[in-house]
Amino acid sequence: QVGLVESGGGSEHTGGSLTLSCVGTGLTFETYALGWFRRPPGKEREFVAAISLSSSITRYNDSVKGRFTISRDDAKKTMTLQMNSLKPDDTAIYYCAATQRRQYAGSIPEYYDWWGQGTQVTVSS
Image 1 (cartoon, one colour):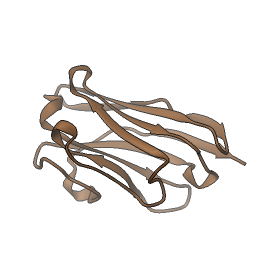
Image 2: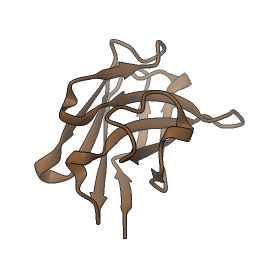
Image 3: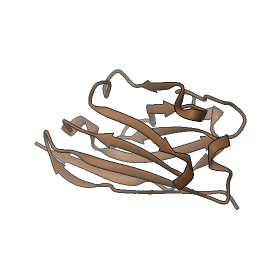
């Protein structure tokens, strides 16, 4: 059974850093396009970053560009989101997502078939 498990969330102050990880189970990880989304408190889910097979394409929401870095290690079945220069607006539940239907799924949540349970990130000023 396919599963995605996020970890690494927590609390930080403005300017701090956190590293989120997403581990895939029950899937051939290297054949899945991956992405990160987040749901801020009281708001709709929004795209954060996406990465294609073989890491050939990466894309970021403008609000995190230059601060966040998405990467994948297929041998470890792990996707990582390095988050630097955190801001209070980054406070959200962060979800990883995966699909085997496309080599790159980008910012469209409907393109993803598998979702993790989410990990909370809280940034205080």
